[in-house]
Structures are given as structure tokens and as C-alpha cells.
Length: 82
Image (cartoon, rainbow, N blue to C red; front, side):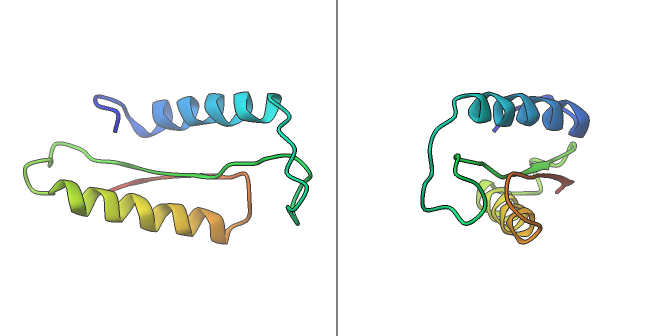
């Protein structure tokens, strides 16, 4: 969890992490997508409502986002407001 960040800042941060992982050139010989390791990220941004959402609901929402981003292919990012 990262506090005090908006959607565009989160997407920028995740893009930097994704790019850094790609630059490591980690082999993934069993992948049907690429011969290098790829990562997908699903992230949710919560605005001024932490008292209304418990931590379990936040994690479940982020988990659903991760499955949605994987449905769109590999090596992707999906950011959404929770």
C-alpha cells in the first residue's frame, strides 16, 4: 500500500518498476508470451474513505483489478479508483 498518491502518480511509479524488471532480462523459457519475465500490475486508489473500507475489501478490490489486467494480456497495468 502506498499512501498519498493519485492515479497518474501510481501509474507512473508502476511503469518505472515494470520497466526496471524488463531491463533485468530475466529468462522465462516456459512463457507462451515472451522468453523474458513480464509482470502485470493491478492497483486501486482509495480517496478519503479508508474509514468506510476495511483492509480486506481493499485487498479484494486490488485482487480483482489484477485478474482484470491479466485478462487483457501480459505485461500490462490497470489502475482504478476503489
